[in-house]
Length: 272
Image (cartoon, rainbow, N blue to C red; front, side, top):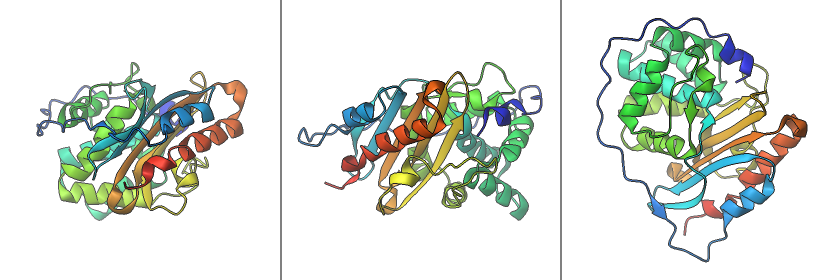
């Protein structure tokens, strides 16, 4: 998502009077890895992108443990990652979509279409989307944007993005989960705005199965490059790497740094 894409969002209507849907209590956080011999991949990721602000979290859903983390509660502007909230919230508030709506939701996720996001944001309550989903999922560090029209400025954390993926896989209604996963599987290396979004997880998956959602923007004040998703058989590993880079670095160098930091996480993505 470009900064211009968020800025072009139409005015947001008055907050919706619909009550927030209630969900079960969020799952407990995973504990740290009990394996001290495992390489410190978080430190390696930090070293691979020394000029970036990073927040990362990798969890093993099967093993029930955190295998890598670095400032997982640091807030970042979400950029297009908020589209996951938009899609899930629309399904919760409107129910099963018709074929046209389903195709638009899949397009918003797969090619990160800002036009679809603008429509959902303006018609489904804008900042209320973030509030409803934060309450339902139990997101502690995700807050609406200060400017209600700038959906990309929604604040989130690596911990909350990991919790959102866990909610999708473990607690969301099956038909909602299937649609969102179909959208993530429809990933295109080139986004609707022409940006090459195949950085991070897509660039360094090294033959592992993966699906995910990316986010990017310039220049607020630096480059934002977020890579998130599910890696491994049966979506075993939740991988979230949020990053911001100085503009002096340039786009190409920022992408290279994100790819290197993501590649450093590879030792954590091997079942023990």
